[in-house]
Image 1 (cartoon, each protein chain N blue to C red):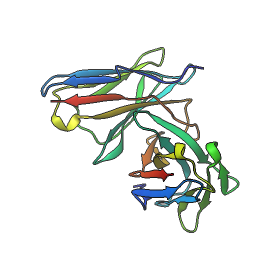
Image 2: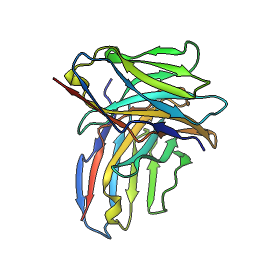
Image 3: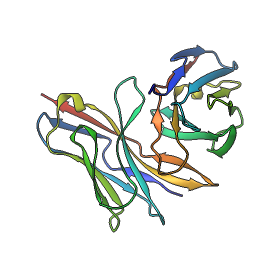
Length: 115
Length: 113
């Protein structure tokens, strides 16, 4: 079964510092990968997704992620974070099942940006 | 375009009761998926509906059911509520395929007392 591991449950950083949120997935023939962000008391918002092509994917709010097939990783990065980036971040893989698909999520990483 | 809407946003029920949650997808989206989010288990897939048919189901007991109407709106029902059903229930809509982005609603916070 497909699975997603987010290696850090909490990541504290200072404002304007770079950040990397790590994500590893179990391998599959074709992989579609996603990063979502959840602000308090809200639903999930898509940051970026990898379907195929270039392994470096750029998303909203200055985030980017790199797909590494050999390492089965899809780490999320931002060169300089803001207080407003404080949120929980979820990595997900799209799994084909019975002619349909579902998203399998990691446990999430809580990013706290301190002044 | 309006986003995914879920009603109600908050709900308090007691054990043994049943509950119905509603989800209105983005206009033109035919796929609706439901997820349960809890602090312990994280985000877990419940089921997915496409063109009024359940296409996919997660590992939840039969107390959890759903349906989709011809206008793509979806409802999920939980019968005989248990304390462990307390969670944020998220609905997501998409066009159809694995490549399509799932757009999430704000969720319904269910508390079972």
